[in-house]
Amino acid sequence: MRWLISIEKAKALKDAGLRWVAKGGDCYFYANGEFTGDFIIKSDPGEPVVRQMDCQIWLPRLDQLLTEIEKRRYRGMWSAGKCHDGKYFVCLYPVKLFHGDTPEDVVADALLWILRQERK
Image 1 (cartoon, helix red, strand yellow):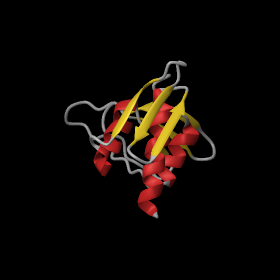
Image 2 (tube, helix red, strand yellow):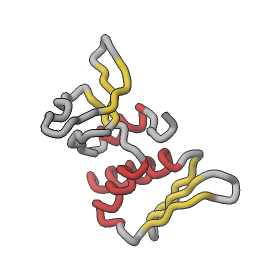
Image 3 (cartoon, helix red, strand yellow):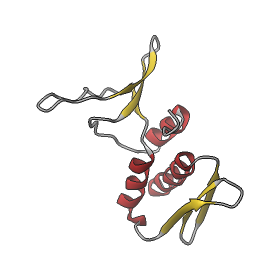
Image 4 (cartoon, one colour):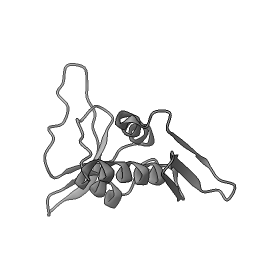
């Protein structure tokens, strides 16, 4: 699935403090030393969502990454787009510019930077 970030980037976001409350349709990676795989949470009306455990790593979609940036008071203070070279960018005004091959990775990099700044 192209619309997911890498597992390594998802782990970095989790380690930097990104918290997740599971909802239907979310994707996550499950690693317990014996089994690894990607899962999409499916929830039927009235049924509980998958129980979260420490070994689950959320794989946020692009829209979820953007929402997390806005939650951190960057609303109106950032922009994103596609460059003339076919790569993507996110600019957090006035301090940081991120550039990369996919919108998901670039937005994840920007969110990771924000989370790390919050911890300083």
